[in-house]
Length: 286
Image (cartoon, rainbow, N blue to C red; front, side):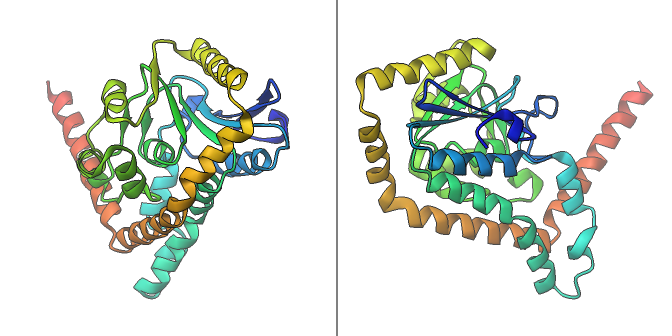
């Protein structure tokens, strides 16, 4: 599985023998986590983890967004009262049903946490929700376009910071900044994220020019730095925090399932729907 033809919702390529690139490829849906995007990404990470030649694994997106997070249709399915959770006889069965639906995300995070290559997050554009929460705190280096703001409206939707992001963001930008971002859902600009130490570089380039600059930058690192040494640096840094990060993922999945058992997201989505309908009705009277 070493070419784009092997996947449905990502592009996969290896450039200059050393740079593996995984590109989310659902641009019309703003690269939201629908279709086969997550499964494809896990499969590609597995291929690159054992690749004999690559040093860098790049995660990026096609189009103007890196990722808008959860697919709206998927959220509707979770909150709309269908499936095993709706037929559960008690809260325990309901929770087990939701835990089963979140397992794919746990494996994605484990695949990134345990990834042996240097994980480069190349943010070609904005990221929202899971798109903003799952990847930055785990990446080894973040290269961003000047359009790449982040926002996680978890509290507004009755959710929790997903997949260990409460810990990984605190490790990256500090507890208080992480609280402002994840608890209050504040949008953070690329400059704020650069100043906070989350982003390594912010560039003015966009689109294809940004992707070209990413590859050129990584080529430059390979010209002056030994690939195995960079990978060893990653291993030595990540080894002491690896178990804590995995535990944080498990805890976050558990907390998210409990929120769904309580129907908190369903209630919040219904409130948002009523607010939108009221606004539409108000505009229609004008």
